[in-house]
Amino acid sequence: MPPIEFIAFDADDTLWHNETTFTQSQNKFKALLAQYHTPEWIEDRLHANDMRNLPQYGYGVKGFTLSMIETAIELTEGRIQGSEIQQIIAWAKEMLEFPIQLLEPVASVIPQLAKSYPLMVITKGDLLDQEVKLMRSGLLEHFTHVEVVSEKRAANYQKVLKRYAIAPEKFLMIGNAVRSDILPVLEIGGRAVYVPYHSIWVHEHAELPRFHDGYYEIEHLGHLPALLEQIGR
Ligand SMILES: [Mg+2]
Image: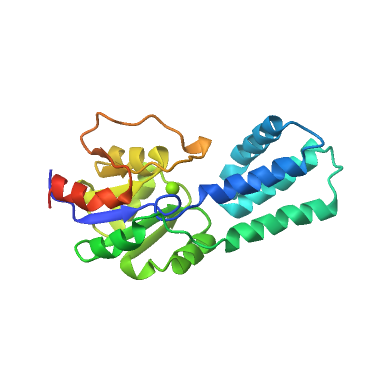
């Protein structure tokens, strides 16, 4: 296989912690509605609404918040108070302002790799939120390109690679979501490194393509430089 010439990273739960803030809000949401329903039922209903709304709202905090409000109205049969809706909105603002916590090896690995490769971020979700997070992460200067897409499908990866004239076989994507960061990249002939995060959103769950030639798995990003040595330049 030709040497890797271009490396792209997923952002949420690959470069910094993200899913934990959603889990925290969801826990507060379950506590807010505790007098009406069991935590399991609240979680089920919220997830169902969130999934149904995804094609219209897209990924991110704002869509998730609208789904929480909708679920609260539904599960209380309209009895939810204005002040409680205000509480949900306050959680959303907290999530949007949450300090960026880089994953352990990121602060050293990214600047190191940036010396040898052009690095890109490919992330999905809300454009403004993702841009702000990247800015606040302190990592922006190390990336030559940033792409925020609405959905990480094979066709979207293809478009990005075409825009920058990158051959798929020289492209390596790194991320924590098999469904979004790994499978579509393998599908277009690229290679992909799966770096598991301790908690994964149910929506992103997928079977690992363990027998695929272009698939790699590392425990954390600290192992990436050694893997790059191994798969050749
Ligand atoms: Mg991710």
